[in-house]
Length: 263
Image (cartoon, rainbow, N blue to C red; front, top):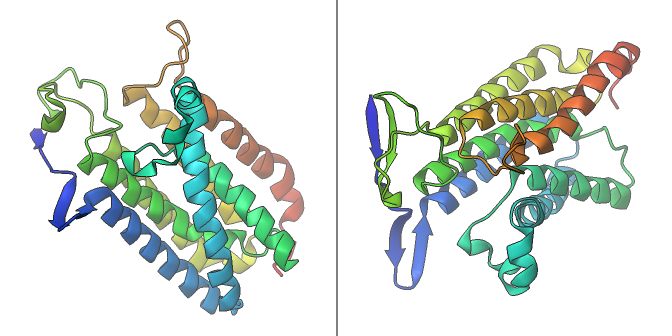
């Protein structure tokens, strides 16, 4: 099966204002993510004003971290020579690894400011993350960016806007579907066993599932290669540490935390 991606990245224009598919899907992901986080917080009888306060920090951490991650992980030489372009986020260029780091830093700052235990809200906030990630990858598909390698067969996606007739893996769709599947797993675990799992269980489960899936999908991407003789892409290298941290949690810490009550 062959699909020709000829979507215009701009959905519609009103005067000088352009509404792009990427921005629309990013915004939709944020709204849906907020809705599920707010629902879970009310269900667990947490203070909803804490949710609104934290999400401001997390949004800023996400955007700033995603941009700086792209700048320093993938194109440092260019941006060091053109520092004024760092703030031109509307030209594209966000990193999911940078976003994860930015969110972690922002959340840490928030709990310090509010004097709240670090682990209290982690498993609530993490429920919204795969929804945002899935919608962002759909936006990448409409933008014809982060494309996959040639399929080598008679199936795949042609990204017509790139003037490329090669049949390629729709890796944006692979990552989007994996994120939505991860959300389904997290939500199922949350509804069935939230009170029976220790703090940070869902967060570490998300970290493990997301970065393992990211590591795997990278094999089908047109990759940011570190060097010609290195077998892994930058995305895979950056995924190794989170995977190791999650595995250490489940192997060494989880068995000792099983009876730890949530606050």
